[in-house]
Length: 268
Image (tube, rainbow, N blue to C red; front, side):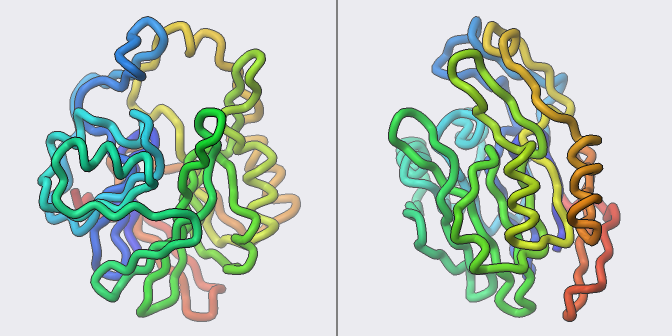
């Protein structure tokens, strides 16, 4: 398995020989509902679009997961798998093959990778978006991704899950509470699924954020505190803090006790 963090929630996942682009924001600014005064994310330069993609995977329909400007740049013949709300975005942008996954449904990519949609974060008053559990069908290696730290209680049925990508801190808004729950929920997830590797997401990377929303966000916890607590209760779990644009090879032995995580040649 090769994992390349492309900033924020964007990942290139290479599993069982397949290249999956997850929640891509690679070009242009990140703005919610065209309200630049509320929130704006920007980077000094765009990231290159990965080549030879087998699948685009979208967990949520909002802009930081289904970024319209980035999706417009992608080949519309690439298959898209998405939450129901994100599927509507992909269809509106002209993608030819769009599969909406409800919670509990699966999609199998070329008989090599199975993707299970799990219950994800609450977005708006009623919509629960998707997390995803990936399984390489040849080796049984499992990867789980949920970008806001809202985890499906049924995940423990799939334990052990080798690699988990999820936030490790909380971000909270006044009167609203935590919109990202990584601090305690990440530790609970480790207890439930016994991962060998945990990797943070939803961080800034090489990005600058500004706007009124940023000024009132409250950070709870820290990566160092998370690692300390994890070491106390789950000493066999390794935390890897990726660098943007660097591809990491994750190799796990068949008996689930051998682990190697190391930077690899950039494959984008």
